[in-house]
Image: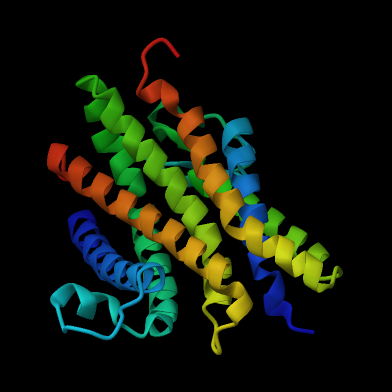
Length: 154
Length: 113
């Protein structure tokens, strides 16, 4: 069961990562008219359309993470401590906390992306989106690395 | 009144309260992973077999409730100047919170700290 939840947790994180990366790049580096390169197309998205999906995916991903967290605490963390992999434990500790800050950031994120977009909120919108994207990237990479060191299961 | 305008205040307060909760262990409840039991506030393991105490859920609850109160209080304050202030703080404070967390957790990465 835990392994199934971990896989769903990871898949939700992948969807969220894609949505937030599209959105963050589109506001920080808007696509201009020109050649239809892949990178330009990546940035030429209707960024506001992603906001509600990102909020839902973040909550679902964090909830799944919270459900499987005790299994990590009992089996994986102890294993890392036994191997004296202090940095590996540390990056996960940090993940747990920055994800919590990201959870608290969601109301501001949603507010600044509500339609119609307020021109005065542009800077806050860009900054909050970038911070949330950085948090999700960090969480995703750490989760992947930790799972590579020691996945769940016996 | 547009209640949504205080949402950035919630985010600001949540970031501050989370760091304070984590650093001072202000957990609203404790979860014992192996026993699968919740206990109010900071609890010691009821039995040695209860497993490690987890405070993370309790810190989240403390921060969310505290931030909701702060946001409710902020709804009494109006004005474009306040909105401007919240716009700036809504990303700066969470960013500062992340940096503070890195500093607090530096012991995991630097020996002898």
